[in-house]
Image 1 (cartoon, rainbow, N blue to C red):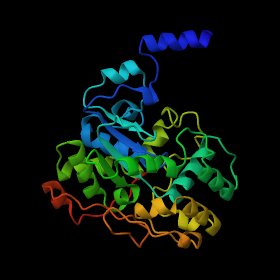
Image 2: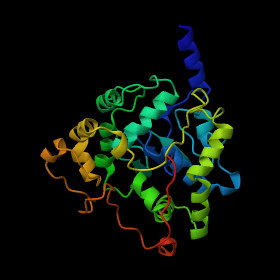
Image 3: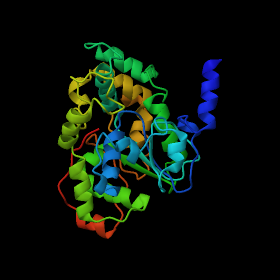
Image 4: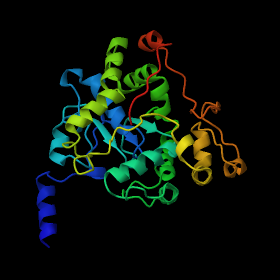
Length: 315
């Protein structure tokens, strides 16, 4: 009874954390992804692009690109517009503009595995193959469903909509400057090649590791986790090729091979060979394990950045 009274009081004064029940404004921009798909890294990239003067770090990232599950309704509704918001939630038809970050689920499961060890959700040394099975069944300690369920809600509901921009983790790593030019144009942020370079440098894996060492014990996502385990780990794509067993790879590909193919991920297991070939939106399925990407818009910034060094960031 007391809990219900307190909850009602919080809602009345806007002190509740709204989550999926937040009030959506027509100029909101949402950064959505399944957990452990590069959302934090992309938050830093966008924050450094839009608010370079605020020196984004783990102390203020929750203010610059907040999560409706972690900020009160009152504060959310008082933020300067347009708001840039993060979410791991599945499809919400109200979101007016969405940057959808997708990562290879074979790498996602590794990132989730090590993060669950860091936050003591599983013991160190927990069998990885057992964890992969849990991952495929959606038996993890968060409410966002499986990778396939969550990703499909956005990809199939809005995949061809001008309101959604699909960006893969792998493309951000291998072609960071041009992908950031795409994001900037999509969210309507005027920018330059120099500003994009600065945002990428400030969001590099090395810099974020240094920030984590200084602020990891304060940030909401890591302050109650093991400080001897890093949040920013390898910050690379393709780690699954060395760490996952063939049986685990086959289990993931058997579960979501069709969606993975449509997103451009190469399937390698014998189990996946039985799947019917899917059609990728741009008709070009990658053969190197990296997803095919939509063509880069021919903006002046994108043109200037063409051919620059590839960038490998964090998660």
